[in-house]
Length: 385
Image (tube, rainbow, N blue to C red):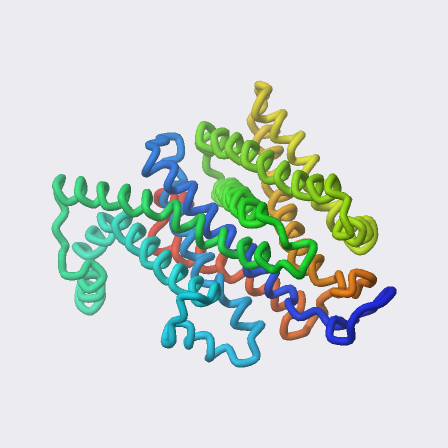
């Protein structure tokens, strides 16, 4: 239920962009972050990340397939979203997203196809009938497998990964651009917004990979590639420092200017967003994982179980930190009235069309898709009984 304080305009009583618009940049952040982790291995030849390279790539696709679902659910007429592609308008930021999203989808699908081509050929040779024909269609009629084809496939993967890194940054950075370019909103209007979104995306991508990698191996009772996990943890530590520092510098720069903009934002931070921003995003879910990752990255912990558990808990906390960051940006920015004299309030319902249950299901579906994909092409080799 919406409540107001002081003076707000009548058309600002209800929040327009709901929790669905919070989930949209959150999921696209995982897309970009996971893809960049995969590209670290292919482009920069980080052999320690070989264990999670393909897993990161497929995770990126799983989240990418459902990145637009929150937007479509938010629309009253979701079928009209296809007009973006049918009637292109290159001066529109949302139209630009449609083309960037489609182009990025092609890059990810091609890279996955090339990465799994050897496994698909193996299944093609072992199958019969209609299944064999389906695999041949997937292989585009080419089932040749030799050193030359593998070398060529590897070069294409590196080229796609190199080209995909800036596209991934644009895909998520444009979301920050959309918010940062709205001059009338004092909480959003900052040139740092798209940079903050990019770095927080990498944090969420790394965090979700660490979370899933350890969880899957724990469920299967399999040993973890410690070098790979340690490297991902150090990257997560570094990128979260940059992301949180940028978030704090944004607020610090506004407070240092001490204009009428800060007069209203100070009330927002100290009032409506005190719990979600000060105590949770910055306090609990930034400072605590920073301390945990600092300990695991700089000190030599002999007990690997304790170390890995610490890293796993920190990754979960950083996933929540990014989620609260998206909430505080999207929802927090709409709590301020254009009158600069009042605030409204918002919290999603439980069973609403854009409520908490639907939000949970939308986030859950990509993980289910990953589980099903792993049944066909195991990410970490054949499963142990």
